[in-house]
Image (cartoon, rainbow, N blue to C red; front, side, top):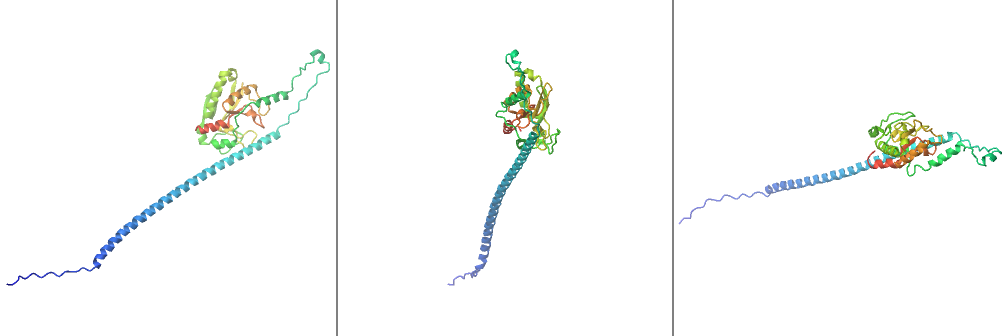
Length: 306
């Protein structure tokens, strides 16, 4: 019996090993490339973040240094102004005429028999002035005169240049803090917190001493200029923190050593409110002058009112 014949088998084709390795190599390269790209991107991002952080820190340090330099420049300018003011004060003292000593006149020898030995001679004018100087020592306790360095630190320069005449304020920030207002019997332009403080002073004077209140006037407040007799020091009138007071329309004479009696009474009210009285200036008595004390100004600054 004949076996059926099977169809011939197709010959097995063997693929070369190299044809499989190529796709594997390509796929591996793609994966490795992707990993390398991701790693490179991460490293670059990390480097950028670190660089930005360092730059941010450096910018902060530079800003702090600039601020410190600006503060030092302001402080240096204030110290120069204080030094100039001291020189001017010394110049004023040196140029003042010496006060002639009081000459005591003895009564005639036969006057004692009729007057019972009492001396009715009026005391010399210098003695009265000395008593007034002694009275001034009682004032400005705990109140400091604000020097130019303090004013520049707190409010900056009112304008770029000065002379002995009143000129307008050009500092825009300071201009926004100024206001013209009627306060009690007077109308003045001053720093807003100073106007409010002055109003409290005048209210207390009106309640306690209405006679003096009715006699109060002013020779002005805001006035951007140099201190009288100075060539460099700026007057505190320039910042609108000082006022000159008159009584019955009369100004107390400048630097004569005397003081109107009414100003002695007013000084107590101003001192209680934290104002400095100009009668106590070391080299130039200025009894008509009242200005906001340094302690009060720094308090207003801390409260955000300047």
